[in-house]
Length: 204
Length: 204
DNA sequence: AGTATTTTGTAGCGAACGATCTAAAATCAT
DNA sequence: ATGATTTTAGATCGTTCGCTACAAAATACT
Image (cartoon, chains in turn red, green, brown, orange):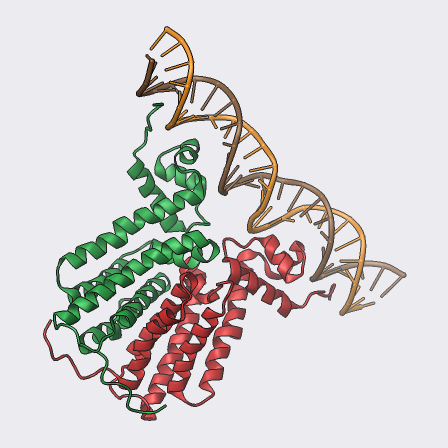
């Protein structure tokens, strides 16, 4: 019972995502948010409780619509190696076409707000681990399918790929250059094709 | 002529570095800065012009004392491969012992402030490229010394190593776990030892 | 119809923000 | 000593911050 909400909750939360994404948590004001969400300040506090709580909601929304969507779409192809390659390729293309240099909300948050907010830190760490788990699953699947070398350690390489991905997203915000970004990814992708060549033979 | 400065400029700028490093540019207030620098607000504006100009100075100070110091120290050893390995190892150790999770000021700035400030963006990009250039020089030296495989492309692998480094620093702020961070670095370090095994042979 | 409940717009709260002003204190040049 | 120049402390500028109080408007339940 009571008066009905007049705004589209999905549109509103998308507006919040855009704000936090473009400006970062600290630099985004509640007035910015309300305006881009198409609601008044009172409605924002009534519906979401406050800036921080809204940010958590926005993170979840972003993870669903951006990260998980990509994971589900690429994994549906049933080609594990292609899925991993396409993931990195998509991020690079997205970064090069990202005129506003917004980067990735999860990565931005991992570096900016996560260290200063334990709860948000755990949430972000969880979302990032979903990406790592995607890499791990597809490495395992690729090995089973014989598309990837048997000496690849899925857990180790999945962490490596996540690291490479984060590196790409960081560097893309200061130097969005195709050659540079593809150079970051290249050795990691080669690893999937060729594996690491035989255990250490040389000293030092 | 005129009254002499009463504060230690080096100590003051170090205090500014600590502030920006711990809290980030946006979240650091001029009052925070003045207090940690041991000076009054008027002196801050008189000596540095303002918050943003002080930040540029702080970045330069950090690059000198942190990034360039490490590069010079490791490169002085004359062992290129060891230098690269030690660089990543130091960052990992530093990250694991970084109770406050301050991370790296350059990386934090690359993601937070660089995209919103073209001038600072160029400065940060320059500092990051110094690190990449360090990797490149040592790969080239390692190849010449026969400590690294000949099929390593120094430019490509240096970008890869920089990406891995940035990935480590991002992930360290949300999940400072030794196994995870070392897993990110491992395949990149293996690359230096074993190189990439023969040009692509398989399709897909 | 009447009451309870919720949402909304407006206005404004106290606090903190970056930056500036003023005047006293300290130094150098003459 | 005097005047020019610079630094310092303290108060304060106008703005914006996250957030809340309040009352009108809109719905559901009885």
